[in-house]
Amino acid sequence: MRVKRIGWAGTRTSEYSAMVAFLQAVLGLITSQEGSDFAASNCRRGARFEVFGPRDQDHAHFSTGPVVGFVVEDLTAAVRSWRQPAWSCSVGRWTSAGEGGATFARRTATSTS
Image (cartoon, rainbow, N blue to C red; front, side, top):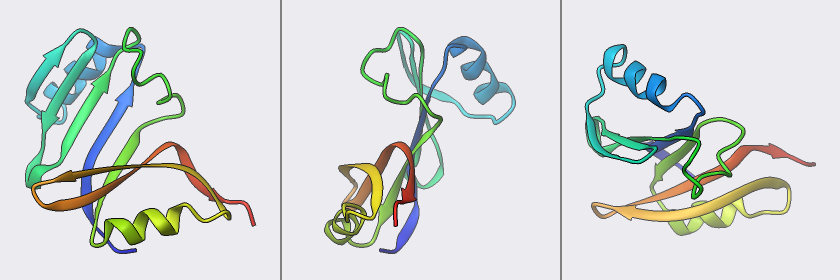
């Protein structure tokens, strides 16, 4: 698998307002979309950063830290390699602007062998 770049990252926090303020004031990210306990910022090269607050129930599984989505050269091969029994992780898929990506969620993949 060859990672081309980070395409998406997100985090869930109990300090939603403070996190959004930090992203804007310190990192200079501009909020491009906002809802109840949700904010998204578009970054360079098409990457996106999303923040989910405590009332957001769709991302409750983001409990161990930020989740990162990688843009990879061959999405099918990437998903196949990450689903091998020696690794413990969750794998999701998305495509954006003709590029494939794979999201590895819930926890950092760790070898069990």
